[in-house]
Amino acid sequence: MENKIEPANRKRKPPENVKIAQGKAQLPRKAVNKQRQNPQKSRPKLVKSTAKFFWKKAVTNFVALTVLWGGAGAMGGGAWLSYQLIVDPNASIWINQFLPEWSRLPFASGKSIQTLSQIRTSLGQVGLIPGEMLLLPKEKSSEREVPDLLVPVMVERKPTTSIVCKNPCRQIVELRVYQPVQIAYQGDETEQYYRLASSVNVEGPAESFVIASHTDANDSQGSNKSLPLTTLRLFEGKVPSSGAWFNLSGQLLRADKKIPYGQVVHYNPSQTHLLSLLEWTGAAGKVPSWQQVTGGGQPELAIDQTIGLEPQFTIYQVQPRKFVPNPIQLTAISLEEPALKDPAYKAALRLARSGLWSPALGMMRALKTKAQGGWSPQAQAQLDLIKFHANVTRSQAIASWASPSQQVLADLIDGRWSEALQVFEADLGSSSEIAAMLKNDGNRLWNRVDAALKVNSQDEGAKAWGALIVAAQEGQRSAAAWLDRLPDTDGETKSRIRGLLDRLGDAVSELESFEGHTSKITGSAFPINSIDPEQWQVPEPNQGLKLAAQEVWYQVQVTSFFDGRSLVQAPFLDLDLRSFPSIQVKRFWKRLGLHNDPKIKIEVAMPNGQQKIEVATVKAFQLRDGMLRLLAAVERKSG
Image (tube, rainbow, N blue to C red):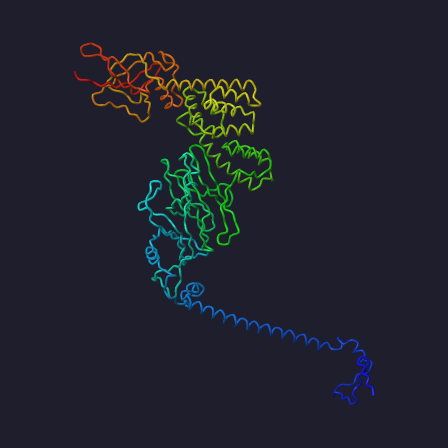
């Protein structure tokens, strides 16, 4: 017997006994077939009910899971918090910061929190000394909040002759930040507690770094040993708005000069983070200061490293960086890389790097006018740096100077070739002093001349001073050869410069004649009872006109004198002391030969009518209306 099962072709037979629900009529066959063909239309109410049930179930499950996970998290957090309180009873310190005052947790006293007196005691127990405490800003401050404290930690050190230090001498070795702690049931009379939030070790710059910027201090380069930092100050005035800025500093005594040095420290209140951003060294008596240099929203840090009349400032801008604890840095404005590719812009930077700040500023301003909208922030920063230096050199050039060499030096530093030549040509006395200045000058003036000629080969003023510098240092023959090698120099210009070289030669010859020159003066002498000091010229401004015991005044009417090269006779109408009087007085004193020996011999009348030769000391001279008089002191001898 074979049983064949064909499920795919098998038809299901309807049940024989079918019960029809009460109240419902049996649908005709056509209606049933229609309902089978469109099942969605046939049961709309059933589908909507099913969807609504699904969403209710999903929401219920989500709420249940949320409650379950939230409860588990709360239990875990409570267990972790309980563990922290067991392991570290003082963990309640930071928890209290997030709790209302009435619900704060008590804590166990320990080393993690201390009062100010306890901080001082604990430091003293390990040989450390707390310095003057400074208040720090908080990220979100209010009148009721206690500020954070910056505590410099110091140690005593043995005083040395090279470090300027108070007595007792102390140096800073660490900076600590302490935050106030809110304890449970803390009243107004309760002593404030603090916890150590952060600290940073302090080490000063190397001695070689400090000396490197002061070539005039000493030829030696110094060692690599760290110099002590002895003072901590908060920067005052207009400072950047981000955090707090401090200056750690010290002073190195070298070649009778106090050279300041130090570090710039920044405090970020949001991370309670201290960071040393910069090591610096500056000119004597100068410390870094925040100034508005570029005209931006934030001030810049200016470090003055000026030596003499040579201005040198390093300007630092506050820039962002990717460092979460302290996301800022100090970046110096540099003139090495040009902000624009224009050849004229590069030429202006060449002038600025050589020290010709004012000519460079003029070129930069002209370029900015032509650039219109193509002027970048970097180009503006370089222009502002040049302008900052040019303001200094221009002020020096227009100032009144007591000597021609100082006036010429200020003019040359500012690139004022013509004005400097006018002073040089004014009189031979000025020329001789300027010649001595050029002979002893290093490369600071020559670098300016070289840069000016490379930018403009036809600059006659730069050519003239280049020839004078070569003549003063190497001789007139070398100067004439250098002048002949210059391109773009016509015959008229060469002739004028050769005349300046001749004048320089006369000035140098005069200086040489003064070296061994002694007085050879003729005239008549007679005693005077009193003098008016205002009517006499003294070789040294601070030298007074007073007589010693047993001395009397004599006035000498000069008829002629030898100036080291020729005999000069009265009347002395060609002598002029109007330009730079103090320098001219010294020069004329040398012409008289009194700088080597101020003593002269005069004839003194005796009571018996006879003449006696006495040695007199010349104290001053008077030059008026072509007449030359000397004021001399003679010792009166008894008998």
